[in-house]
Image (cartoon, rainbow, N blue to C red):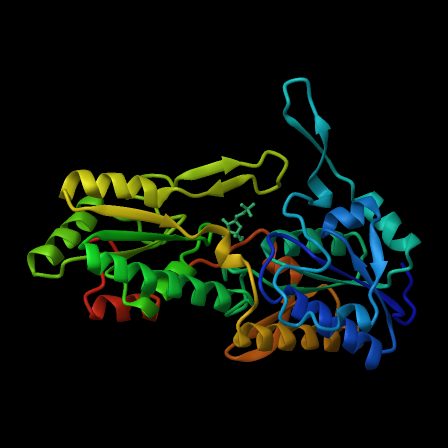
Length: 368
Ligand code: F6P
């Protein structure tokens, strides 16, 4: 790769789609063209496009009117890691993985890309760190509804998912109270409980179950029964998809064998629904919110955050500070080495102030 002045950059979005991705693509492209006089190339479907050499020019017009559009105009993939890419299947149908980083380096060189802006979550940052170690110049921009990237207080996408989950809980409350039911809402978040915790607090959920605080089924049932005995006719439960009982494992929805991170969680609310109904004899229902949390237009807060992150990425690029991920720390924009973010997740600390605030108003976390 050239050590001369940056002239052409590539932009990609990796991992699950997330509200605010297009906002970042827009700001990176416009700022690159207007302020730094660069050419911008959009890489299709995340690392898959880098591996398969699928790219297209991003012009000023191409990124107009996308600020508030959900998803990503570039496409994305949460199955393509260049260092462990599925190149086929064996006779038993098992995926065969190979390191195709050399192919990526050759494509980047052939396309004349002097640097990459990789927008994604922990999988994308891990891939970026490995490519950076092979000599690519990369700047990472953190996205994920899960809010679980290390070294940044928040990622864009989280606020949108939070408002959708909160709205869903408030809607379930009306049915819960009308029918005197126990209603569970299952949120996404993998092994982190940020969405369930914040949405649970924002909606006044009676019970919040997160992976970081394993629950006791007896405690959950006792809280539902206690409420009904005290004349509270219903119970609203926010449960993170990664929530698990003490000594137990999270409920797995599926294994995506081709993915570097193959386990997809889901279904704990349905399991709990049956168990609570059986033990308490209260009428109980479960709703899995699923990908609705990731779809649609980003909130104003996420658009602002995505814009700030993207602009900071372009400052790093101009200053030649590569192999960093943009981060927000103590409310200030900064950056951290990609290698420090790779292969790690930020879960909810059990002494988080919101957990204490919830306990203070009688919210159960299912552990006592
Ligand atoms: O990381 C974002 C996320 O939506 C998680 O909350 C969820 O567990 C996972 O992706 C779902 O992945 P998929 O879109 O492959 O089902």
